[in-house]
Length: 238
Ligand code: MN
Image (cartoon, rainbow, N blue to C red; front, top):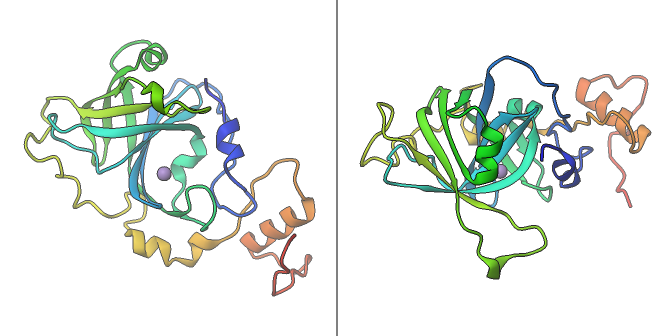
């Protein structure tokens, strides 16, 4: 089900610069995809495919393999807003997903069937990617859930597999591992992490929350400090 409740519940948008986002209205243009390289507790690759106004998302545990014989584990995660596809920066320590996020690939994708929602529900999605680094046919195949590991909110494990085509590199699963810069800014993860721009506090909260805190956070982000007289030292909050 397309919704952002889980995405929002996991994040404090007064602290992280990630977008709060919204479910986008249906449009007729091409579907987007993005892969974000994410130096969290463990380095992983977040694959996001636009569908029904959100990004369906998987955390791929290693660099995507362009060798059809080498499958990658892709852990299903919560739907993300389409605005997330522009996010590159640092999620503060202690926040959900804390670490540096790099835009590693982006472009458009096309399902091979006329009903990708049904394909996902059945656990077998075949698709084409037209990105800067990822090309051609790919498949996401859901694995059988292990009933012994079932908890209140089970995460489905999938496999990301390259199809055999001209974009495949048989025998060279790590072919893309030398690609370590951002497709948006050319920066490495270290350069993103040390950038001051990545550390701007931000809040796109449209309603709710503490309005005073919200105004001052926005003023700080845009440099308009005159009216709010934000104290130089932030007092600890309780
Ligand atoms: Mn991630």
